[in-house]
Length: 254
Image 1 (cartoon, rainbow, N blue to C red):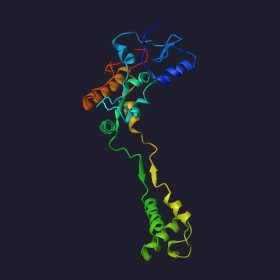
Image 2: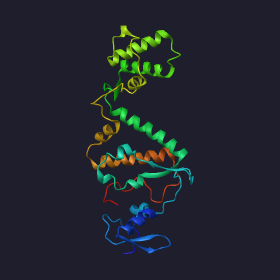
Image 3: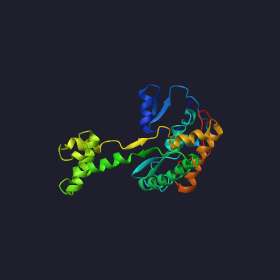
Image 4: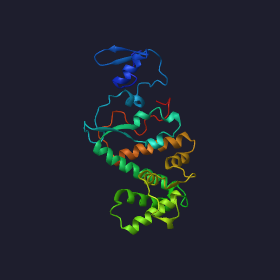
């Protein structure tokens, strides 16, 4: 019906045409007319201003027009765990940053993530993994023998070989020197997993999303808080027209 619904990339426009669900109305600017009634049509107005606005290929913080990277305002580790209806407006919370701004924003975002997750993790909880000190020491012995066998003092070489042979079941440590360790055997010790995984460990993002519960309003406020965090801490000066903390969050609401 001639109403502008949103702005999309040329690649996405070609996809609509190739699928037979859209057709070009103007070959010069790539305008595509949909051949079906879209679900959850956004009515003209302030709520859909972002979807209809042109997106300039520049860093939203400093305006740099080169070396761009996509940045998730709401961390992807959290967003991917949210209910599907909160993912339909995902593009609103992916902005373009230059490399320098991306590094700065990512560091601050990670600090906030760490704080959120530490607040929710029980103080007596065990870490995600623990180190098997014996296997770790054997790995160091094997690395030393592989990298500097000729430079090791004889007493150390005999000690290290004896411990590794005992670990491999080749002989008793007291019999060191009888059998020669091969490079493949030493390499197998180096590649031994010396970390013990904690099967009860809950990843930080899961803790955070579980704490939100099933309330749409609680989840919505969580997303809005990340948008405020982005605005208050990084002061972006080149956000697309219509980008807002209160932009629609759930499918069918804008």
